[in-house]
Image 1 (tube, helix red, strand yellow):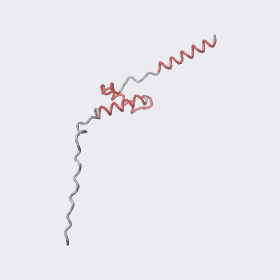
Image 2 (tube, rainbow, N blue to C red):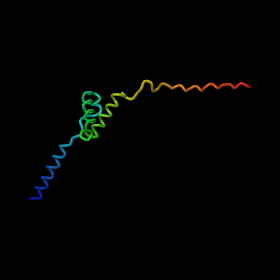
Image 3 (cartoon, rainbow, N blue to C red):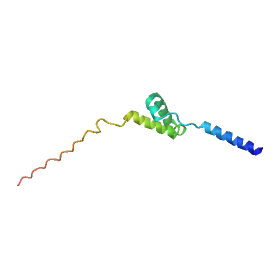
Image 4 (tube, one colour):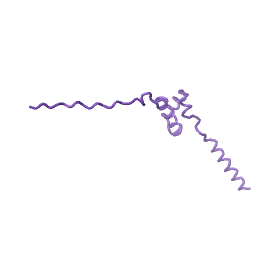
Length: 95
């Protein structure tokens, strides 16, 4: 009987521990779409990174980068860059 009680107690403790931790609900895409939430989380990460967690702060960082940089595609990326012209050679005059 004692063993059954100990197993039930251990099972209930493990279930309660599993319920306490949940996956972060803020994804990078949701933060990019919601700038107010992004601003609030960015302030929380700055104030106490350890409390907020690495996963959330990494998502905040990536969302901030995407909002600033856009999709990463530049309209100028495919433009060819002209090669530099070599400097003109000075002709030496015979003395």
